[in-house]
Length: 217
Image 1 (cartoon, rainbow, N blue to C red):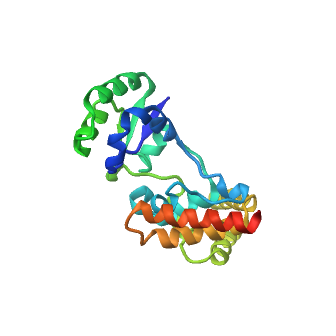
Image 2: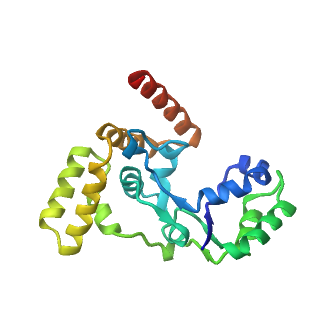
């Protein structure tokens, strides 16, 4: 077991890196979006980063946002959510290396080299994999929830045995989620595809929170 994390381009991360290092890496030990199952929606910039996960694949982002499937450890790297997997036994040395050698003037390439020297696995496009990616691409088209459910039901009724099992599990996950939240996630993905910065996502999500509070309080 170890830690996986995404080496972000944001300069802000370098400036405050020493203060947030441990939380930052542990945050990416797994990725899970449970918000739809509790009537909410993915936030903290999810509108921007979900459509850009896994080689900029909004279908996978929509799948993760709607189902809340949990991705852990090395799988985060092999599917392109994270860029580096650092085994637990290497973590303290990595932390020490960054504390001693990273500051506000450190560029992204330098940081990548530091992390790479401690990593067991590094993401590359040619080694990219994601479970059931063919089914996800067929079903999770960014159009409408009505059409998505129709495609999913059709796969459940007419697919192969393995496709039927997968479709059944996805249908069960969606049945536990709020329909309003599902519609919101779909709209987030649609808009997020065209966003040019994560700040746009923060602004949209702040407006969504305000509307949620207004409607449900």
